[in-house]
Image (cartoon, rainbow, N blue to C red; front, top):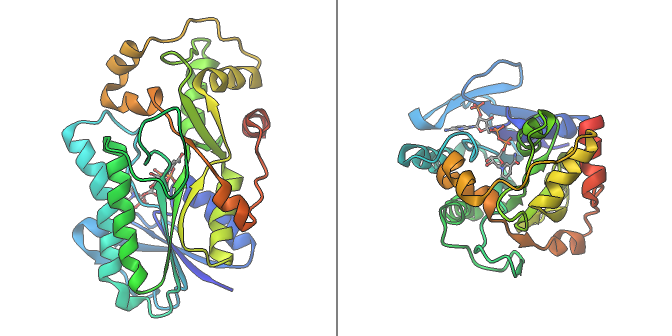
Length: 294
Ligand SMILES: NC(=O)c1ccc[n+]([C@@H]2O[C@H](COP(=O)([O-])OP(=O)(O)OC[C@H]3O[C@@H](n4cnc5c(N)ncnc54)[C@H](OP(=O)(O)O)[C@@H]3O)[C@@H](O)[C@H]2O)c1
């Protein structure tokens, strides 16, 4: 049995992961700035505070901390928050490494939007980082994670937009479609990588169980924005009747964050498949239906 500590485990992915890991016999504790449950442990990386009394038995540390990329418009201040909320918690955990004498594995969330913005290429984990803001953010995030390799195995899960009815990208995309005003964005041809939350949780567990180190593209499939929008609409028996929302309008509405909506990357999941991971959801229709109907 593993003693797993999840930093940032109160969010969308953390809740799903906690439920799964507990159901398979692990003990899970969560580091959070606002403890509300018996298995919550208080910390605040920005004020260097942490309750160290229950950390000693930790065998695996999963770090999911990070302010939402889609949370606000990317002002200079919010860009700093996006970076600080990922780097500070990791650095603070490392500064407290003496409290984790049994740690064997550090697994960090990372992002699939780390590759250059080139729609013609299918990227693997050995490709380099892009030069845009998000790619460079992910680069620094992973570089900080790599500092743990002096102490334990390090894995970086490059997460694609997660399909989950409880929140995240799917819920946001569904809102205008549900209201009858859904539309594809830009020319609609941009890549839309995705993963169902059950597979994402399975990947964290797989990497943990098989003691796999390195970076992993957590992507089940890649659609186009137009296809993705149409399948979302179909899953709730709605029609997309509006023309595509032009790119300049998307930029006006979302500012620099529009890059997430108008640009996408195609990535390969061969590394995970070759290691023996089996995706449950490889068809977008089935993955979305399981969220909207489930
Ligand atoms: N969901 C996706 O589709 C997706 C896709 C790609 C990558 N990811 C990455 O995966 C990770 C988890 O995603 P999620 O969807 O579960 O996010 P979420 O629901 O927003 O949860 C993020 C967690 O991070 C913690 N946090 C935020 N800012 C912090 C700070 N300054 N210091 C310490 N903790 C902080 C929060 O914990 P407390 O408030 O309890 O302290 C929160 O529980 C994130 O890093 C995200 O970027 C997610």
